[in-house]
Image 1 (cartoon, rainbow, N blue to C red):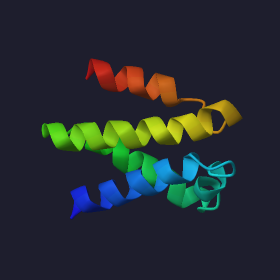
Image 2: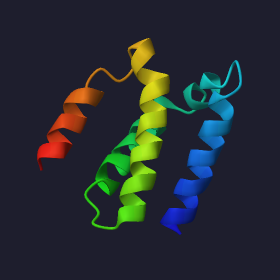
Image 3: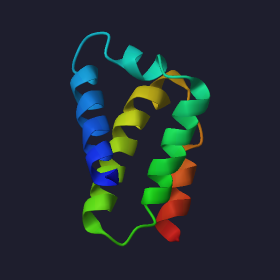
Image 4: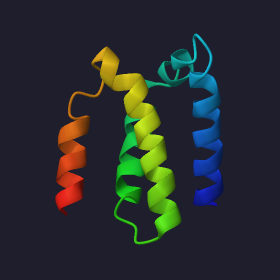
Length: 86
């Protein structure tokens, strides 16, 4: 079920970001829920399953591409660096 949800999320966000106003779809989600989603994907990076790691990485990359340029996820790179050493 998690794999399907991740796939749907990933495809929805990818398709939305290809549109001129695509970033809006992410920012229309409540800030607390966006934080929960980011935390869930970060937690998925602890998995040993390659498909889970791949999907979580893609989703985090898409979210970061939307949030980081606007200054919404300042600690993204720090978090990713910490994750890579664990």
